[in-house]
Length: 254
Image 1 (cartoon, rainbow, N blue to C red):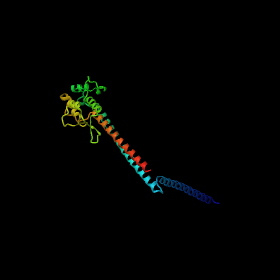
Image 2 (cartoon, rainbow, N blue to C red):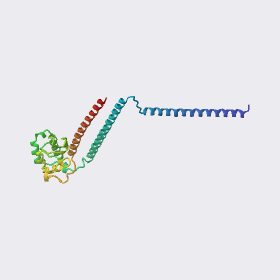
Image 3 (cartoon, one colour):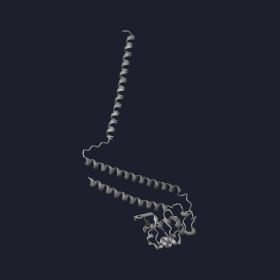
C-alpha cells in the first residue's frame, strides 16, 4: 500500500470524527432548548388560575367572598398610599427645616424678647399650663409663646365642630380668655392658617416687622401635624368599623 493511499484514509477518518462531534454538540443544544420550553410550559400551568364548582350556592358564596377580598385589598392600597404620602411630606418638611435652620436671622420669630405682660397674666391665671417647661421669668421666642397657647387650646379642646359634631382641629373656637389675650375682634375667625396674625397683636408694636407674619413657625407645623394625625386616626376607626360590618355580612351569607 502506497503512502498516498494511507494518507487519504487518515484524512477520511478525521473528517468522520469531526462530523460526529458536530452532531453531538447540536444534540446537546436541542436538549437544552427542550428543557427551557418545558419549564415555560410548567410555569404557565402554575400561573393559570382555574376554578371549578358544581353548586350554584357555593359559586355565589365564593363570588361574594372574592369581591369582599378585592374591596379589602383596595382599601389597604388606599391606606398604604396615604401612609406613603404622609411619610414623604414629613421627610420633606424635615429636609426643608434642616436646610433653613442656622440660616435664619435672630429677628422676628427667632428672636428672644420680653414676654408680653398680657401673656404673663394669662399664664399665671391658668394653672393648667404650669406643668410645662415654659419659664415665664425668661425672654422667649414667639414660637415658644405660640406652643404654650396651642397647649392651652388643646387641653381645653377649643376647636370648632362640624354639623355632625366632629372636632375640626384646624379651626379654633376661642373662649373668653383667649379672645382677650389675642384681641380677637367680633366676626373674626382664627385657625392654623392665620394664627400668627393674632400672636403679632399680642406683642403690639414691640415686634420686629409685624406685617411679615405669613410663614408658619415650627409650632404651627407641629400643631397642624398633630391635628392631621388625629383626623387620620378618626378615619382609620371608621374604616375598621366598615371592615367589621363587611365581615359580619359575609358570615351571615355563609
